[in-house]
Length: 175
Image 1 (cartoon, rainbow, N blue to C red):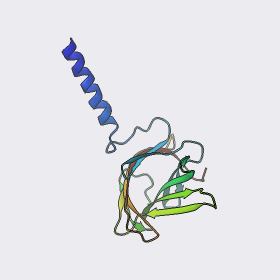
Image 2 (image 1 turned 180 degrees about the horizontal axis):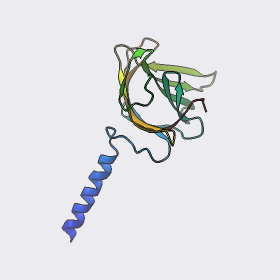
Image 3 (image 1 turned 90 degrees about the horizontal axis):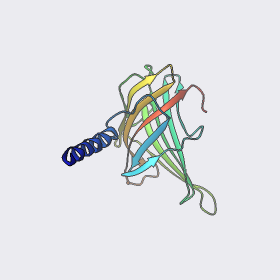
Image 4 (image 1 turned 60 degrees about the vertical axis):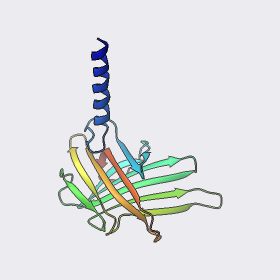
């Protein structure tokens, strides 16, 4: 009995770990979220109205996720934008610095004396991929994954590695 109990717990732990891997797409059902890692550190977007969305434009999809931090007081925004005439086709989109697809990460801090911004983006040398794994037009939901490298637009050579997955509602107007 004790042997089968240990086996059951081990199998359950492996199933839970396997279900949370970033290579597996989230379900179409459930609340909106964006979960990422930035240089190996967890990053979870806030879920208040306007913090997470996918915006459909003419031949364009824009994903945006935002969160507030306390230490230091800051706003962080993760954005991915791709050009496509086949909205939410289940496929991968390249992210570079071109108008056809790019990804950004912006950090705005509020130190004494006024806000400062750091802006990071994909480039022709530091690219990535956005993968659409599914969508539900009835529920206005899209799911997928992303992975990209971003460098500061200031010209610094530091490279940030950003990966994650999402389930967000889409709209045709910024919430």
